[in-house]
Length: 194
Image (cartoon, rainbow, N blue to C red; front, side):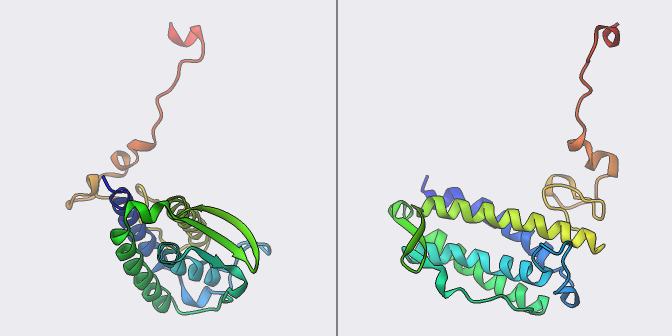
Protein backbone atom coordinates (compact mmCIF):
# COMPACT_ATOMS: atom_id res chain seq x y z
CA UNK A 1 0.00 0.00 0.00
CA UNK A 2 1.41 3.42 -0.90
CA UNK A 3 2.37 5.63 2.04
CA UNK A 4 -0.13 8.28 0.99
CA UNK A 5 -2.97 5.78 1.36
CA UNK A 6 -1.91 5.06 4.93
CA UNK A 7 -2.30 8.75 5.82
CA UNK A 8 -5.49 9.71 3.96
CA UNK A 9 -8.19 7.99 6.10
CA UNK A 10 -6.71 9.37 9.32
CA UNK A 11 -6.19 12.79 7.75
CA UNK A 12 -9.82 12.92 6.60
CA UNK A 13 -11.14 11.90 10.02
CA UNK A 14 -8.93 14.27 12.02
CA UNK A 15 -9.60 17.24 9.75
CA UNK A 16 -13.39 16.72 9.86
CA UNK A 17 -13.27 16.53 13.65
CA UNK A 18 -11.03 19.59 13.87
CA UNK A 19 -13.35 21.60 11.63
CA UNK A 20 -16.35 20.82 13.86
CA UNK A 21 -14.44 22.27 16.81
CA UNK A 22 -12.94 25.24 14.95
CA UNK A 23 -16.30 26.43 13.67
CA UNK A 24 -17.50 26.84 17.28
CA UNK A 25 -14.81 29.38 18.23
CA UNK A 26 -16.57 32.59 19.32
CA UNK A 27 -14.94 35.38 17.28
CA UNK A 28 -15.62 37.95 19.99
CA UNK A 29 -13.45 35.97 22.44
CA UNK A 30 -10.27 36.13 20.31
CA UNK A 31 -8.15 37.80 22.99
CA UNK A 32 -9.35 35.48 25.77
CA UNK A 33 -6.86 33.06 27.30
CA UNK A 34 -7.23 30.66 30.22
CA UNK A 35 -3.97 31.75 31.83
CA UNK A 36 -1.59 34.68 31.44
CA UNK A 37 1.04 32.33 29.95
CA UNK A 38 -1.41 30.79 27.48
CA UNK A 39 -1.88 31.57 23.80
CA UNK A 40 -4.98 33.75 23.12
CA UNK A 41 -7.96 31.83 21.74
CA UNK A 42 -7.91 33.73 18.43
CA UNK A 43 -4.24 32.93 17.87
CA UNK A 44 -4.74 29.25 18.74
CA UNK A 45 -7.64 29.06 16.28
CA UNK A 46 -5.55 30.76 13.60
CA UNK A 47 -2.68 28.34 14.21
CA UNK A 48 -5.06 25.40 13.79
CA UNK A 49 -6.49 26.90 10.59
CA UNK A 50 -2.96 27.15 9.13
CA UNK A 51 -1.56 23.79 10.22
CA UNK A 52 -2.93 21.58 7.41
CA UNK A 53 -1.11 23.90 5.00
CA UNK A 54 2.17 22.84 6.58
CA UNK A 55 1.68 19.40 5.03
CA UNK A 56 1.43 21.00 1.59
CA UNK A 57 4.57 23.05 2.29
CA UNK A 58 6.47 19.97 3.44
CA UNK A 59 5.50 17.91 0.40
CA UNK A 60 6.30 20.69 -2.09
CA UNK A 61 9.53 22.01 -0.50
CA UNK A 62 12.56 20.68 1.32
CA UNK A 63 12.67 23.31 4.09
CA UNK A 64 10.72 25.93 5.95
CA UNK A 65 12.52 29.02 7.28
CA UNK A 66 10.83 30.35 10.42
CA UNK A 67 12.61 33.69 10.15
CA UNK A 68 9.88 34.70 7.67
CA UNK A 69 7.09 33.83 10.14
CA UNK A 70 3.89 35.86 9.67
CA UNK A 71 2.60 37.05 13.08
CA UNK A 72 -0.82 36.00 14.32
CA UNK A 73 -3.81 38.30 14.02
CA UNK A 74 -7.39 38.15 15.27
CA UNK A 75 -9.73 37.04 12.50
CA UNK A 76 -13.44 36.14 12.49
CA UNK A 77 -14.16 32.45 12.85
CA UNK A 78 -15.75 32.31 9.38
CA UNK A 79 -12.47 33.48 7.84
CA UNK A 80 -10.46 30.94 9.86
CA UNK A 81 -12.77 28.10 8.84
CA UNK A 82 -12.45 29.14 5.17
CA UNK A 83 -8.64 29.19 5.52
CA UNK A 84 -8.74 25.79 7.24
CA UNK A 85 -10.93 24.34 4.45
CA UNK A 86 -8.57 25.64 1.76
CA UNK A 87 -5.52 24.28 3.58
CA UNK A 88 -7.19 20.89 4.13
CA UNK A 89 -8.17 20.63 0.45
CA UNK A 90 -4.64 21.51 -0.72
CA UNK A 91 -2.98 19.20 1.82
CA UNK A 92 -5.22 16.30 0.84
CA UNK A 93 -4.37 16.85 -2.84
CA UNK A 94 -0.65 16.97 -1.98
CA UNK A 95 -0.91 13.80 0.13
CA UNK A 96 -2.83 11.92 -2.56
CA UNK A 97 -0.31 12.92 -5.25
CA UNK A 98 2.82 12.14 -3.21
CA UNK A 99 4.80 9.04 -4.13
CA UNK A 100 6.67 6.86 -1.66
CA UNK A 101 9.86 8.46 -3.00
CA UNK A 102 8.46 11.92 -2.17
CA UNK A 103 7.90 10.82 1.43
CA UNK A 104 11.53 9.64 1.71
CA UNK A 105 12.94 13.11 0.88
CA UNK A 106 14.60 14.87 3.81
CA UNK A 107 12.92 18.07 4.99
CA UNK A 108 14.38 20.71 7.32
CA UNK A 109 12.95 23.31 9.65
CA UNK A 110 15.32 26.27 9.85
CA UNK A 111 15.63 29.71 11.34
CA UNK A 112 17.82 31.58 8.92
CA UNK A 113 20.99 29.51 8.51
CA UNK A 114 20.37 27.49 11.68
CA UNK A 115 18.87 24.02 11.10
CA UNK A 116 16.41 23.21 13.89
CA UNK A 117 15.57 19.70 12.68
CA UNK A 118 15.72 17.46 9.64
CA UNK A 119 13.37 14.54 9.15
CA UNK A 120 11.87 12.65 6.23
CA UNK A 121 8.71 14.11 4.77
CA UNK A 122 6.90 11.01 6.02
CA UNK A 123 7.96 11.82 9.58
CA UNK A 124 7.04 15.48 9.12
CA UNK A 125 3.54 14.62 7.90
CA UNK A 126 3.05 12.26 10.87
CA UNK A 127 4.36 14.89 13.27
CA UNK A 128 2.13 17.56 11.74
CA UNK A 129 -1.04 15.50 12.15
CA UNK A 130 -0.09 14.73 15.76
CA UNK A 131 0.77 18.38 16.39
CA UNK A 132 -2.60 19.51 15.04
CA UNK A 133 -4.42 16.99 17.26
CA UNK A 134 -2.48 18.35 20.26
CA UNK A 135 -3.59 21.91 19.54
CA UNK A 136 -7.15 20.71 18.90
CA UNK A 137 -7.07 19.26 22.41
CA UNK A 138 -6.03 22.65 23.75
CA UNK A 139 -8.85 24.27 21.79
CA UNK A 140 -11.38 21.87 23.31
CA UNK A 141 -10.25 22.93 26.80
CA UNK A 142 -10.49 26.62 25.90
CA UNK A 143 -14.01 26.13 24.54
CA UNK A 144 -15.07 24.09 27.59
CA UNK A 145 -13.86 26.89 29.88
CA UNK A 146 -15.92 29.35 27.82
CA UNK A 147 -18.95 27.04 28.16
CA UNK A 148 -19.11 26.45 24.39
CA UNK A 149 -20.78 23.06 23.69
CA UNK A 150 -18.21 20.56 22.41
CA UNK A 151 -18.90 18.23 19.48
CA UNK A 152 -17.95 14.55 19.71
CA UNK A 153 -14.26 14.06 18.99
CA UNK A 154 -13.42 10.37 19.54
CA UNK A 155 -16.60 9.72 21.46
CA UNK A 156 -19.41 11.53 23.21
CA UNK A 157 -19.01 14.77 25.10
CA UNK A 158 -21.09 16.06 27.99
CA UNK A 159 -22.78 18.29 25.41
CA UNK A 160 -23.49 15.96 22.51
CA UNK A 161 -24.02 12.24 22.31
CA UNK A 162 -22.64 10.29 19.37
CA UNK A 163 -24.57 8.16 16.95
CA UNK A 164 -23.90 4.44 17.22
CA UNK A 165 -20.68 3.51 15.47
CA UNK A 166 -20.89 6.51 13.17
CA UNK A 167 -24.11 5.30 11.54
CA UNK A 168 -27.15 7.49 11.07
CA UNK A 169 -29.89 6.88 13.55
CA UNK A 170 -30.95 7.81 17.04
CA UNK A 171 -28.26 8.83 19.49
CA UNK A 172 -27.27 6.17 21.99
CA UNK A 173 -28.54 6.57 25.52
CA UNK A 174 -25.94 8.34 27.66
CA UNK A 175 -25.13 5.12 29.58
CA UNK A 176 -24.45 3.16 26.37
CA UNK A 177 -22.53 6.03 24.80
CA UNK A 178 -20.23 6.14 27.80
CA UNK A 179 -19.72 2.37 27.93
CA UNK A 180 -16.34 2.74 26.25
CA UNK A 181 -15.18 4.73 29.31
CA UNK A 182 -16.09 2.03 31.86
CA UNK A 183 -13.17 0.02 33.17
CA UNK A 184 -13.74 -3.38 34.80
CA UNK A 185 -13.28 -3.36 38.55
CA UNK A 186 -10.12 -5.24 39.43
CA UNK A 187 -10.07 -7.48 42.47
CA UNK A 188 -7.55 -6.04 44.92
CA UNK A 189 -7.66 -8.46 47.84
CA UNK A 190 -8.54 -12.02 48.76
CA UNK A 191 -11.42 -10.68 50.86
CA UNK A 192 -13.03 -9.22 47.75
CA UNK A 193 -12.81 -12.60 46.02
CA UNK A 194 -14.72 -14.48 48.64
